[in-house]
Image 1 (cartoon, helix red, strand yellow):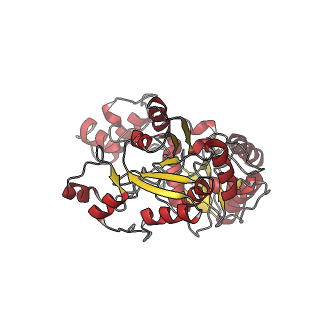
Image 2: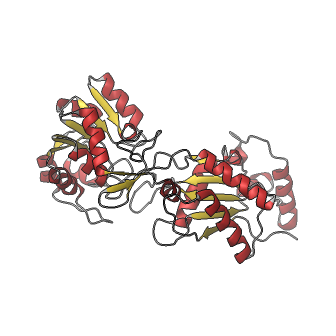
Image 3: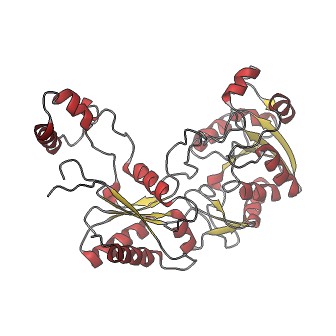
Length: 396
């Protein structure tokens, strides 16, 4: 009998994870218990995804504002620091900025505009047009910015991030000067010692700064990329991907996740005889059309995944086949023709007309987005996602 359902996604409720917990066994037990309780079978090529947060919690990968300040002092001394292109986020950046300010005497904070890297807007592009301001060429002081646009609060958070970030810096005893520019070289008119806080464009920003005469250049990925006074750290990403934990501590992106996903896969294989794919995920990679926020504030969607999740989808657009290859067929004849076409499709459909309109993204990015939307970031209590039928097609 034909299956009537394709992909099924379940958010699995798990215990609250604490430092030192055996995260691999917790995940395996949660999956096996859910399958037993909810009455679903575990199959080859099912997928288990685990939010990075519970992996980092189990690892105890935390650091304090003081740890960040210590690293800043070691790298910059008493020099004025140009802190450029941070995202506008209480969760993601406020404590990082607090630590930077605690380790500095003066900060020149350079904000990109009209929005940050992930789409949080200070002003709208329409307001720039009305004022005749070109964000790619015009540099604004804080006074000039206020004169043009006044005091605006983020529509979702209700925060004036300019004032908020200034208050964080000054509360730590550092002097603060704020400017607005989208050109990394602008900050070199104020200081030659720069901290690039952008996420996905950080390598380009650091290269531009170094080639333009900057004397000290680091990124957030260079802070806490090794322990400071016994703190947590992330060798690959430093402070990127961190979140606020308490008023004085942050949780960093998890370390060394590849052995974790492989161990979970092996434990499930031992328990069920099935090969289940496993990945750790952070932010999904999608954009909110209303708020214009691009969700991906982590350095990557997935820091680790099993080999079966490598690559991109190799899919055919069904409606293209129906409208172009088989417009003369209907009903069962059409279904059989399309099924046969799918069964005989090429190993690589890149460039073929039959695949146009399918999503050209990596599997891990697609599955990470699916998982992030399922688990959410609130109180659902489902940090483990179980996905079935993702690799099925119309013929299964």
